[in-house]
Structures are given as structure tokens and as C-alpha cells.
Image (cartoon, rainbow, N blue to C red; front, side):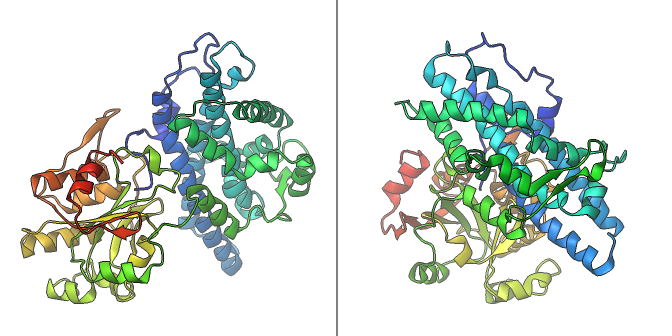
Length: 471
């Protein structure tokens, strides 16, 4: 699960909360736990939208190359993507100004001041990166730019939306504000500060931001001039983003986005011995838990485990269960034969992946319900296949069914188990650790445990420690 179950809220709620964006400078007692509930999902949503934008752009550009125009379905998809981007941008803008005034206020306790500045700076950089890695490619395509900038009452889209975002990206005023915050940040981190987990998270966002490094360039405006040329004042097509620096290429979107998510490969990555060892012991319906401490999101997930998936089984297993020709399974036969036998919910949605792909991790646990009847197992597998293609649930709500996240996949696939949940901000959520807790009641059994890239032969003590999250 590549997101934080504890910090839960949707971007739409941010747009409706009606609070004052700029806090009273005298209000020094910021509730950063609350702020993270608002901010963390926006960062996750940004990563997902960068990938989705790249895929959509490639599809639409291919359609234009082939037909010269977009189908009605593609126009709707572009409108929906524009609306989603607009909501995300507005929500992030709220966070960029939250503690901006602290840049000039040295009366605030130093550590708290730095934390607030880092919060707003990281939010602003996410916003800059979203333009750089997601929107600029559409700005550079005249046909798509024209559609995006057009007003649309059905999707409540105002005119010139992309134009406004482009102008904000090259705004001298915004650049000056960013440089002030960056200078304070750079000066302060050179001093000994007590960084908590949230500050480490902000620092990771800042230091890994492509825009952060671009903004530090002495010739920033020359780079901007080479990439973004402004002509005129009001016309939609007055802004053109050139691709001379390769900032808006499809591969760049993926490369830069993935670079923000992980700092290294997992200890079990491309280990053929471990892969074969695990593969030989998995059974259809097994629940897989993983730990990836090298990922940006991992430290903000409550509990030890960070992601969950289901092993749906090989061709032979599915035939033995009488499911190989089932309408839910049949469309995926080719993928399964290619050893894509794990269903997991990622930012791009619910997909089939191979064990080899899954093993870019440090730790792994395999849980199994030993007493499950054949009929229950068939139900679990079919429920799992039924989730394929669903979108990622940025609401993190177990009661929604049209979108889903990784541990909700387990919740949905195993309806005969009563799963523990947590209530946060009015929503019931389930985390991978909630799933692991079921081993205490013997409803699930621990079958395999890997820690630090190595198999644990006698896992009882270590497993108890993991459940208590004492590692």
C-alpha cells in the first residue's frame, strides 16, 4: 500500500472547508498532525496523476496522429482529467500559503518555524513539479491545449485553466517567494535542528523535487525562456511550452515521478533464489504483505507493514479450482501464463503483477487461511479478479466499492472474515497491519516471513515484534 492510511482526506473536502489559507502570524501553535492529514494524500494523488497524465497524453496524441481529431470518449476523458488536475492544484495552493508568513517571522521557535516553512515549500514544489511533469506536455500540444482551455459547463471548467497554470509557473512574483523560502530552508538546515518524521518527509520532497534544483539555477529565467515563451496577454494560445530541455517528454514523466518515490531497490529485488523459494510455497488466495523502508511513503503508514496483495494462483491452481474458464478469469489467461499471478492495488489502479515485480521489497510475509473451504477459496479468488481495473481509492474508505486501495482489496475479497478497522476523519479504513493482526486470532496463519532480504526460519518472536511495530 503506497500511501498513508492514517492521514486520510480527499482533495474535494479541502476545497469545501472554507478556512482561511493564511494563518494569523500570532497563531504559532500549528497542528501538524492535522495538516498532514490534509497534505499527504495530495502528494500521493500528485504522483498518481503524473503517471496517468503521461498515459493519457500518449493515447490522445496517438489518436490525433491517426485520425486528426479526438473521439467524444477521449474528449470526456481529457475534460475529467482537467477537472481532477484543477481540484488538486487548488488544494495544493492552500497548503503553499499555510505558513508562508513564517519566512519573515523570526519570533517563532526555530524548529517549529523551519517545519512550517518546509511544509509550505514542499507543497509549492509539488505544485511546480505537477506542472513540469504533468501539465506542460499538454501546453505544448496546440490541439489539446485548445480543448483544455475551453470553458465547459458540464464539467464546471472555466476558460483558460491551463493558461493560468502556465503563467503561474513562470511568474516572477512566485519565483521570488520561492527563493525566499528556499534561502531560509537552506540556511536553517545547516544548523542543528531536531527533525521529526514529518520534517524528514518534507526534506525528502524538497531535495528530490526537479523544480527545486531548477529554481536554484542562476540562469533559471534563461531556462524558462528556452522552455516557455509568452506571447501577448489574453489569447489562449499565447503560451507555448517548448521541449528543448526534454522536461515534458513521456519518459521524463515516469523517470522523475518514480525517482521521487523510491531511493533504492529492495533487498529482495531480482533474487532468483528467493523468488523460486517463495513461488514454490504459494497457494491461491494467499495474502502477501510487504515492507519497503526505502520508499518515501513507508514511514507514514501506521504499523509495520506497508502494502498488501493477493496471490490468485497459477493456471494449474485455477484449473483445479474450476475457475480457469470463468468469465472473470478468462480475459487474463495470457497474463497469468506469463506469471502475472498477484493482484494488487497501486496508484495506477488494480492490476495483475508478477512475483518478480512484487519482490522489489525488503520484508515480506505470506498469510494463509488454512481452514478455508474450496467454495470460500473460489469466492475469494473471484472477488479478487472482480477488482481488476478499478481506480485507486484516494478516499481510503472501506465502504466504497468503485475505487479501492491495497488493504481494501483484502477486505473485499475475504467477506467471510470480520476485519478490524480504524476510524479517521469520519471514514473507516483498514491497514496492512490490521490484516496482520488476524494471525493473533488464528484466522490467518503466518506461512513465510522474510526480514532484511532473508528468510526467517523461526519467526514467532520477530512476528510478534512486527505486530507491535517495535522494529
